[in-house]
Image 1 (tube, rainbow, N blue to C red):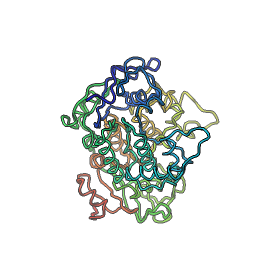
Image 2 (cartoon, one colour; image 1 turned 120 degrees about the horizontal axis):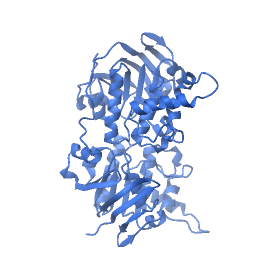
Image 3 (cartoon, one colour; image 1 turned 60 degrees about the vertical axis):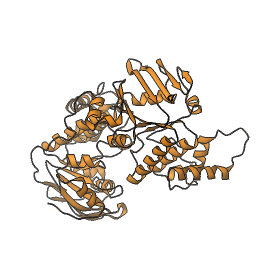
Image 4 (tube, one colour; image 1 turned 30 degrees about the vertical axis):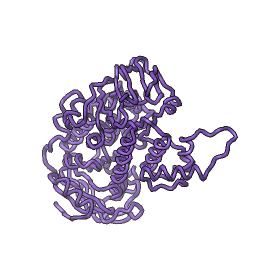
Length: 500
């Protein structure tokens, strides 16, 4: 059996930066082949070479019977290559059926659109991916997971032989993840080859037949997934042993910093939340999608102010009607979507780090660049941010380093309470380990940390106590030693357990 796709010693440089230093990779018919590597390992560049967005400097690509030095995006699509990106590339003001129709058939000049036929095809494809989405809905009305399912429907309809999935479950609910897994297995059964990129190792073990690991722009090797363990995969990716992703607790909890009494916000669906967070402890927030965790964070940061209940900070009753007011009280919030709300990609790192403390750093009229650079350098050093320097743009950093910049911005405000929403989402295992160490060291220094995470092992491994939300309220507070069954039972409403 011949490979659907084969790359031999592919190399690519951007100026002095060597993104790919010699990558070889092959994909067989009916195979799910995982592509693993830390942020910056070369995965994105390799995908752009396969889809024709970049031309390699050296090496060859063989697709079916054709051996090529490079591709164009149009040629790649004609050869049966489809890529489903983490951020869907759909026309927001067109309907789902129109988006699918445009991707499946290039309109001829002066031809009429057969809308009934277009709609029927969209219904068929949406049914194949298990998506309960109206073909008449405009894309801007859809959630990110729904848009992703539309992208998958487009790939299926185009008759793709090679389907690349780049972090496909990053924004999907558990139900939608199961649907996606079913689609991937159907593609495999029909002889399609799937290149699957994910930082979630459990997905790799559940779906992939083989895995190719990239490190520093080179392919370390290709292995049958059944022959590897979690720790072996991590070592291949980072080139070293990662002793533990979850550093042990050091020191104990101190006085109560944040106390919530029957807190609620009608518009956010949050109601009657009672919770304490102490200095020196990490309280992990678990719960299913829609349980109200992010909504609670937004209330505490003044984005959607509370309309019932009380908030106490270090024993003093406070009201928070805006983000500015939250910051003045010593509350910091690192949001889930770092690209939209965490880091301004076009701005230098120094600007990103200091923007929340400009009134303190620059009490006069003029910005003092030297002072800003000094502050940024301190955080770059202390948090181990890998960058060319304070002037490097935020968009030049890997996902893990962008997250460190986002954390740095709020640490610069010297907060009493740090709220972290999905702090390691979309970052590789090496960066995860580093971020976990930073969070633990902040707690050791006495900071109160409220950490929201959909990654259950992260909640179990990092939390001194675990607050479980369901239906907009905290239904249980469990000790850090709780197991996954206890947490999920509380999240599903199968038990209620309050632990001081």
